[in-house]
Length: 101
Image (tube, rainbow, N blue to C red; front, side, top):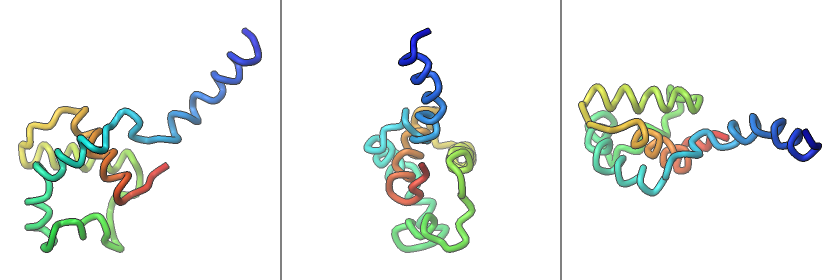
């Protein structure tokens, strides 16, 4: 193994943690979020529903927790989202509100 290959292998874990939703498409996620999530969030917190992401006491503090919450909401309201849809929504929410790295 040459030095370049060894360096790339060492950097792979860093790349995986650098972008928690690297496989997600935030533009598609926004469309799905607007279609599947907003109405329920408006019922829960009022207004346009975005306060659910801006609360001081928000419960989501890790990328994994965000994916779990999206999956739980998907199951709870029977939204019919596939795992890749959930990843897209997570990518959108991360870009817009959470800023996980």
